[in-house]
Image 1 (spheres, rainbow, N blue to C red):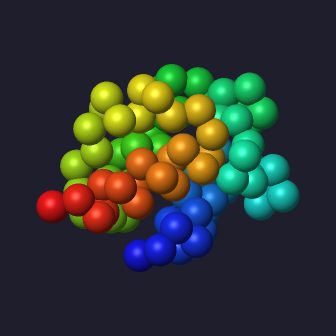
Image 2: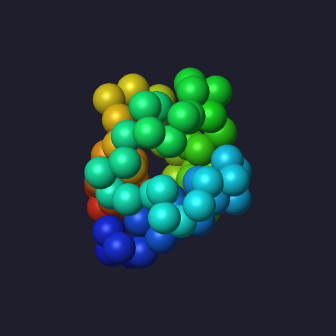
Image 3: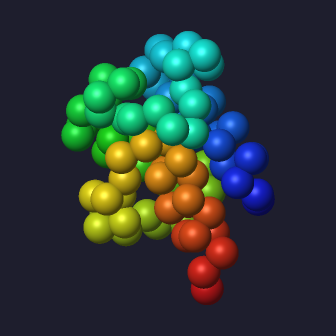
Length: 82
């Protein structure tokens, strides 16, 4: 899965879980400031992504996540490590 496909998965999750519009979700969008997610929402997003990619996400990885692109990069790195 490439980064564009991951972005589409993350965007789809944000739309589905938090009723955001696709126009709001850009790689540089800040999860907490611009998209109004809170820490519970972030956990929901991680759980949703874990189900989609079939891999366990380390919570430490997501503590540093601030933007949609950070989420994409974290998932990409997870999928491409053994």
